[in-house]
Image (cartoon, helix red, strand yellow):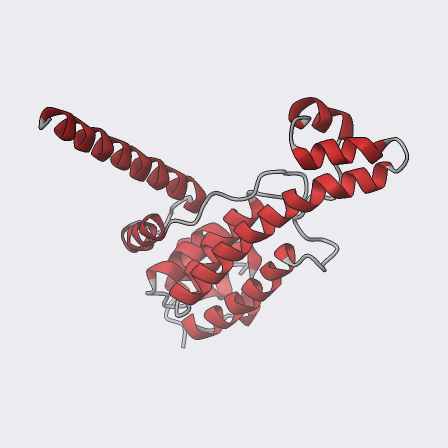
Length: 215
């Protein structure tokens, strides 16, 4: 039974805080999902946290299509500017091989260049998908909220894959969401990764400084 009467509001236009109150959402990761991805679900099918989680699992399954090499609407690069690639990366072996066949078979040349690019993207997508789904399998809202922006950060127009998976940064984000559900997941992950890199650099400098001092 809903405590907050949503009948006075349109489910589509109700504010996130009203949806959270109406459906008695207490899970901070579900709250975060509502703030950032409320338009992705049909709220007429939501009754409580359990049904919302079920709908999110469906969204996660749909999200996987974007990283499926066999899906025609995936996020892998479909075309490449050969001349630009020859100019920028002409000293790389596979690009040299592509140049040799480009005049007689430009499509074959593109394939030679696209294969390693898409292989790297696939490896990166898979690393994210496997780690997040295994480590946070009991938190579908968190899985979706982090995988959606990560996957969308590397579309079919992008050569570069998503940022590197980092367990420490992801774990810190998981805890941050509990305190502040209105987070930009990708922005926070990138900030946390930068902070970790700086920590490593500082630690390395300190270590090298002590080593030099002890000589």
